[in-house]
Length: 284
Image 1 (cartoon, rainbow, N blue to C red):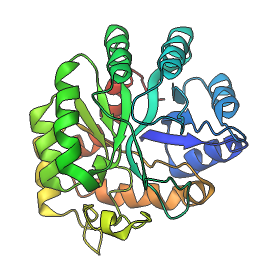
Image 2: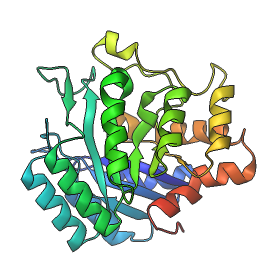
Image 3: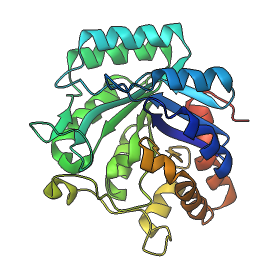
């Protein structure tokens, strides 16, 4: 299996390889969480240096962007891609509601407008470099955000946009995005469970439940969606904090059960082949 999305803070590198090996995960798309006092960048680079065939690296994820990306973010991200070993842009928080266990903001969300001038400068640079970008937006405000993201995807058809967690959206919402824009792929991280971490429960009520029922069976509308777009979905865990890494094996096992309900060719694409294509990498 190829975990298409994971992240670490400082001093977490030692958790990654053991968790992967115990779970049978052979490759991972990994990036650092760049907090001022606990940036995981050195950990990510160490893992890549010691196990180059196991990891595809994304640029560090920052938590200080709002309204538009700042010029320094665009400059640094492009420089990091050009210098290597980064191959994609790590998660940009475009629409991210405050979580129960996380930093709190005055507005209740971190928000970067997809129509921002510097957002477009970055995407133009990525299009020239064929580097995928992980764009995080949660669908608690679909009517505000979908038109803006639709315009962004349309403006940069040469960029591969990776949408984490399917935006915690419904099958209908995900179908709308995938049918409209062929340059968008979706990670399935956290779709094996109901979203329960938003601080604002009114916003959380606008998110969709898990793609499986209480017994772990894939819901009919999601099975139809996976079969309709077999090349657009990526298995991922979004392991990032200690508790998620502690439960890594359980999360992967749950996904093995879910993928086991699908025809082998489709399951293999979601588990590994699609990520290999998107990140232009071959897993061991």
